[in-house]
Amino acid sequence: MMTDFQSKGQQEPIAIIGIGCRFPGQLDTPAALWRFLQAGQTNVAEIPAGRFPLDTLYDSEPGRSGRMQTRWGAYFTPAELEAFDYGFFGIAPREAARLDPQQRLLLETSWQAVADAGLPVEQLAGSDTAVYAGLWADDFEARLFGDIDGLDLYATTGSGRYAAAGRLSYFFFFFFSCLTFDTACSSSLVAIHLACKALQAGECELALAGGVNLILQPQITVAYSQAGMMAPDGRCKFGDAAADGYVRSEGAGMVVLKRLSQAVTDGDRIYATILGSAVNNDGQSGKHFVTPGLEGQSRLLRQSWERASINPTQLNYVEAHGTGTRVGDRVELTALGTLLAAERSVADPCLVGSIKVNLGHLEAAAGVAGLIKAALVAYHGAVPPTLHLQQPNPSVAWAELPLKLPLENSRLSQTGERAYLGVTSFGISGTNAHVVLASQLPLAPAAPLAARRRLITLSARTSEALADVAFHLQEHIATEEMALADIAYTTSQRS
Image (tube, rainbow, N blue to C red; front, top):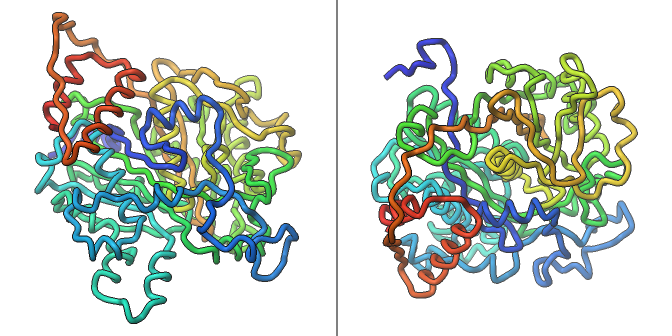
């Protein structure tokens, strides 16, 4: 059926109605992540003991063959990494033992995102729901296939990247396409872009999209250390003169997407609205194959803004790729700032930030992490501070560019009735993605309900899980402004 947007030749906006996330440091709900960001914290710490043989792999001297130049990252603890309720997901013990923890995290965060959206899982079974996931690490597969005598079918289905999205569709009983994407660090934002396209084309009614990243082997860290890409002190110094590399990190994020018109009709809680997006490649605009390209990034931004029907004067905040490399930061900030400077003065700066100063670089899951942060910024109307910024990068012409990195919690300004935001993610092979968001327009308030007691129903498969559900609900009620009647209705639908 053709929507009003399609009849006018426009893309229908896409609503973000559910968020699932899992990052080291028990950042396992959107509310916990938001408090963490507003507090200006970081979860980067020394690599957990036992993950890698650091005594033999680490060397502070740059360029030492076979050595990594950093001891830092945002890693899950062994207990966090190993915990998995395989029975809940209908997986047998033998299969679970060969299941890549990345697939486990995708299952858990997808379930969380659907629950956060207030959607009864049993009602989604049999639906045309898309599943698009970004994933590039194959560390678990390499480890598993190192034991040739222990190989079986579960080893292939449990560790192959091809199976990651398919496992979600199987568990939820979805019938639409399920695709796993690998464009390196832009994988998850590319997945979200294509999920929006499927929704706008009317091919599906709902989409789950995001990505995951785990670091189970040291080889990539060693290789990137040889190239001088790792920050030795474990700090992502986005936009700073001392920017000297990125910090590897782990985590997963999934979002539930729905066409805006349907989300409004269904009465969904909307974090933010995706107005438009684009994906492109740097071509040869970078100096080398892995060097970011100014022209490629500029084209990406222009195309995204055109598709979203906004101009640079409307942007209030941009969540940058922002890895904390001196060249990468310069190219990204110059591309964005130059385009903005053509339309607005330095007296009207756009706020810019990067979640990598807090969480490190989630690689394949970096894009969805940035999108989740931007959606929370839009939802709460505030911008968290930028960490580790002492002296601005001198290779960026700050005096000529309308850009500002906030050093403290700041109010998100609006253009008219709403705020406009951007999210950027780049891949090392040149595949770039950008998404334009807007805060949701205020809806007419619902008629107040009579004050009375409400029954809140909770259910889980074990008593321990039930206690966990009760704890998270209590936390949610304490941090979110929601009517008791709405909470009672949602829990009755999910229980």
